Amino acid sequence: MPIPEKDKSFYRYTKGHRFAAMYPLLAREIVDKYGLTEGTCLDIGTGSAALVIELSKITDLEITALDAEPEAIYMAGENCTLHGVPDGRIRFVTAPVEELPLPDESVDLILSRGAIPFWDDLPSAFREIFRVLAPGGNAMVGCGFSHLQTLEDVKAMRPVWPPDVLAERTRWKKGGLVEDALRQLGVNTYNITDDDYGTWVEIYKPGRM
Ligand SMILES: C[S@@+](CC[C@H](N)C(=O)[O-])C[C@H]1O[C@@H](n2cnc3c(N)ncnc32)[C@H](O)[C@@H]1O
Image (cartoon, rainbow, N blue to C red):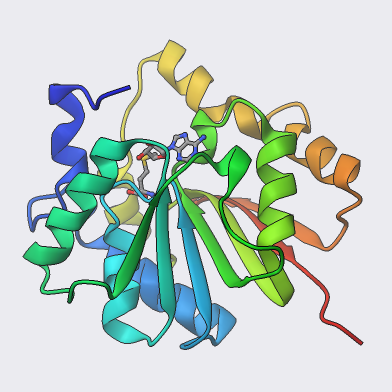
């Protein structure tokens, strides 16, 4: 589905983007948290690619940015040019999370910010995420901001949704849907955190013995 004109500003990673101050801090937080500056990284539902543009500036990670929407991928390419990210530094892929066109156990760090509310089939999404995650790798999937921001900044950035949109955007967190999806897959090496900064599902795939 093409991106509606009214939503396009969210896909342009300019200084005026409403989360512009957040992405560099979230990228820094992720690098500090997982201690990973090389290896492979996949960003699912990359949108503007803002998070991986920032990661590309501070790491040597081999980054793949994936989105189901071809127009998002096109705009993400434009954002790379705007930020001086060299051609080919980030590999772009158009595909849905439910059918990741990547080999088994090939990604050391999987990220996905703000895309899970739009996934219709959580069991398939998490099956694919766990399939491509390398042994010893981590996935961080959810919605939120950076703990390196102040709570005041987060409150000022957080969108205020009408009640029906809020219900739709937070449906994935309710009724144990994520826990059920992971249980079905036999994945028990996960942690779900929920605080004033956001809600994240972190999955670890045990390394080979
Ligand atoms: C709210 S945007 C978040 C973009 C970006 N990750 C960020 O934090 O700014 C959600 C993105 O997820 C993508 N998306 C939604 N459903 C998807 C799916 N099933 N597979 C892959 N991408 C999907 C959308 O096209 C959109 O670009």
